Length: 472
Ligand code: NAD
Image 1: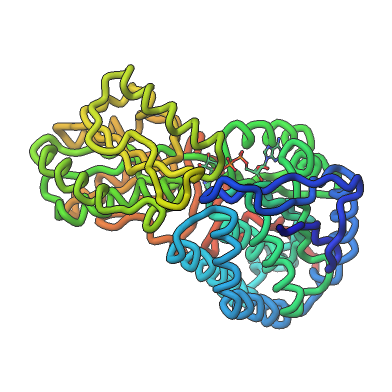
Image 2 (image 1 turned 180 degrees about the vertical axis):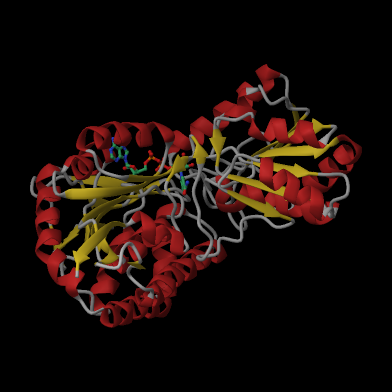
């Protein structure tokens, strides 16, 4: 049984009021440890530690900042087995998924560590008697609030560009997956990051999370999570006039045209709604299939889905509440008249009678107005919707409150470019699903959020531009 405390000012710190939450391992359903239940007093301490470190970190020579970031990447890689084990203990995900997450997290520090050498501004030719230049400045303290599905990765995705841009961070991981973010902060300290540059406050959203968003010295919040919480944070940020990055949910369209490599499309479409047990914001859960290959696609997808082994290649659903919520959609699908192709039930896993496992589930003959086509399920559930024409596919894809990604399967390059142009989503994949490269900007349209993480683009979301005009 472990007990986790906050990481503030380079040291583990007990919660001021002495309260802790139980942490449950979703594969066993058993309480595995306790997590500090942080509140405003703990956030105040974390912000004070961040404030004390802010000026020093901002003035660090870029090359040294870069060296520390690269050392953090190396430390993450050197501890990959331990980090993957922590992630698995909190989420129950399969080892290859956890290891890929650690590698992705190291890649963020490596990539942003190398970007410290980018020019920090421009010289503008405004007038002969004026010397005008711009420079990038950090916001100061950035709040990073993250969910439970890819905890280490999502923390690294926001923290690495924030640090490169010269900010200091107060992070709050999801209360059900605190271990890996805490380990990241400790490893970063071991890699030479000065105390107070990354602080981690543990606890629930309404207490610790909201206190971060409301704190007068927090100047930007990078939030990854649900639409409802994103809206709540947005209301507070509107009053405080601070910028946000909101990485929210998705119900992404995955479009299979008749000329696609059907076996590849079927295999990858199943991966697209079952990776991490479907608990991925960019899951391609709305599968639009052109009528001529509809039956063949369903056969191939069923075979691919049934080849997954719950408890081995398919992990559990994160919490009891979410486990019940996913099962609730089986009744909703029945009421709305969808045809069950496979799954639609809890999966029994030997040795884990209390585990939250769901069999890979595929529905066919779905119409886009059914609730299983409109709502983010966040479980291994895909819905298949037939279409006839390209225009119809585009209209269906865009008929959603979300706009995170779109995936196309076709051999026709002109069509791929045409459709990519028309889909309302932050990223489009053609003949491949979700490569997760650190270089590619990532973010949403519509209710999937705004701002961008990843790539050079993210750096523009972690600082101000100041213009200096000098008469010479
Ligand atoms: P969630 O919104 O419930 O929680 C996310 C984080 O916000 C947690 O740390 C939580 O403690 C905190 N929080 C909750 N209430 C808060 C409040 N009032 N103020 C401040 N913080 C608060 O989301 P979740 O259930 O942990 O994660 C699943 C959701 O995240 C899904 O909707 C999924 O699509 C989304 N998600 C989006 C991305 C992306 O990059 N776009 C990635 C992963 C997950």
